[in-house]
Amino acid sequence: MKGADFADEVRKIVADSCLPTDRCRAHVEQTFLATPQHVLVSTFTSLFPWDVHRARECAQACRVPVLYIEAAHRLADLDRFAALCPQLVTAKAVGSGHFLSLEVPEQINPMIDRFISLYVRRPG
Image (cartoon, rainbow, N blue to C red; front, side, top):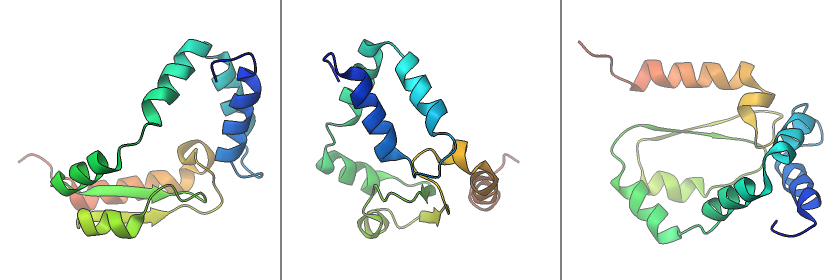
């Protein structure tokens, strides 16, 4: 991403994240390409050096309900996640790549609302 082929790499990242039917693909691509290169490089550099040991520690230490909404592209080992974090609640969106809230908000928003109504305590 740091080189002259920045735009091509961004297009590939977006294409790999989206389904061919995702309507938001052009918008996401335009947004990424409008972002200064150094900002996207910094963002992706901080996202990708995934530390599996740290992730395991965080999942085990978590004591609050967690909602994981999966897209068409599985990005997590949900069986392992559930074993480490038994309060994990999972859901799956239909017909969407990575950008769930842009592509299928009519599915995602009710899932989040339901999760909050069941697992988030209100004061008082």
